Length: 273
Image (cartoon, rainbow, N blue to C red; front, side):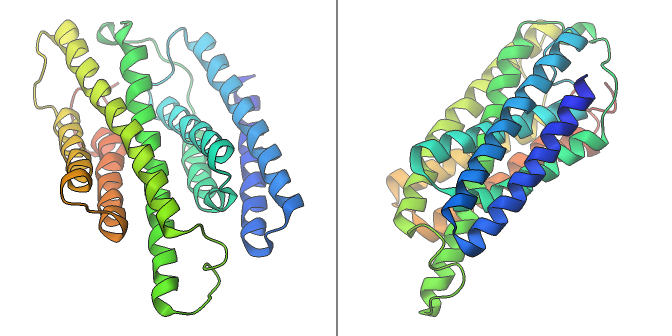
């Protein structure tokens, strides 16, 4: 059942991605409504799939590469759905939906049966740490997309020509403002994720911090985003500078999430689990 529901969600995400790409070209209201409908149904089915996996596995499903990618994709999609309701930015979906689909296809490609949890992972901290960490990553993904859109729109304005993106992308000040609001959500979530991870590590391994590659890169990511927020508040770094820093921050966040787990041996390595 799980695989069937997940594949159905993937198909609907694919349709919504196609609809978003058509929308950004033609800006048709009917297509926009279709985007919302297909994407919303896909998110609901994706949530059902995660809940079914949770029931089958008997634990919160974020302990393998497949489960982590799927849950990360779900939070990205849910985050964008909330963003769309609040700010009505369907054009963002044309950029975010393909990226989210890639993550979910990678999850589908790495599908495997649930595994018994190692003793260290059998803890209530798995829920708290997993949800806050992945929610922070999802927020940074939205920030990354908004930063890319900002740079594209800025380029159009500097060219002083009404190119393809000029009429289709939101104003720069709106993009910058929303991006900042998302950072103020994602950064506290990342902070809570690191703190709860440290408490959990002390419970499981007797040490709050062991400079495991995952811990080290989590700290690097935290410092980057702390620097972004600090520069905005004290030095007034907004607009282009902030957008570039957010892209750098997301590169660190993505490496922390995937690169460290797949490439660097440590307590958080998927291969060791």
